[in-house]
Image: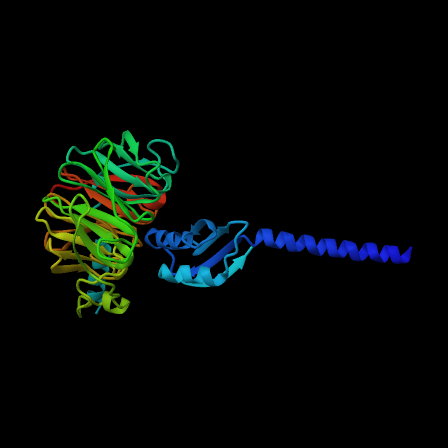
Length: 101
Length: 314
């Protein structure tokens, strides 16, 4: 009985950890980039355009007050931070922290 | 010493006095007719009709001089309508920033032609942000990420280009009334273009905080402004327009004001401050001047148009 209970606990722990991995994958499809020097529409539109060109990015939202660009990545695509940083650089800016949600 | 301090204070304050009269506003955030979601540029035709690029609603809206809605066009064509200009024949030219294209419409919004593509070659664009047409029909396009101006025939045939990337040091820019800031004819993210009645070409050199003036072939004539807070200085020069007296109006984005200069580039006056009331701005990005002395501003962050009547004695 004790063995069965231990197996059940191990299974439950495995199932919970699996769930968190799946949830992690799902939420990792949103990334927020802190961008230096982003402050007017002439800047924001350029950054938005360059980020939208990255393969796998579904939409871009830029908050000029906070200097943050939030990108939604297609669920079946992977976009790494390097690709995001390159797009920001091409737009004429520097990417600081990139947070995945 | 105190006398100089008082003079300096008066000079600084002089930048924000003598507001034009009869301010009228229209718009507000939304997608209905007459509302805007990031109005970016404005133009006025010879009949006094006003055209606005409404970025997030992917359209151009046309209004009477008093702001009554006339029609909307371009939905389904535009990705991000940016700059707008009226040709001498009252046809309408619009750049699309994301599509790297130029659209040409009649004054009822019917498409005449579209041309342009993304690329680095002559005649190609990387983010065309504004457009102007001179009396001979020559089309000027601000190719923002190439930091250059390109000229075309109305059917899109490439003719010429000038300008390259050149960034003026901020300190040199702020002190350019003492020492020349150099980089003449170069740009750092140019934002807007306008043609004077003498065919002079005015380019808002946004991140060099100045307006450069050229002859119709791109020969450098003069530079106006430089980084600063007081009258005649800018913090990111954006929209520009030239009126019938060849007076230049400049939207001074971060200083949230409009500045007026005479035909030699001498500062006349400035008005506006940050806010939501009439005569206040939240990032002005476009200017148009009508033949009868009205100046229209796209008040980008407040999602509205403001119309001012310029004093006849100014």
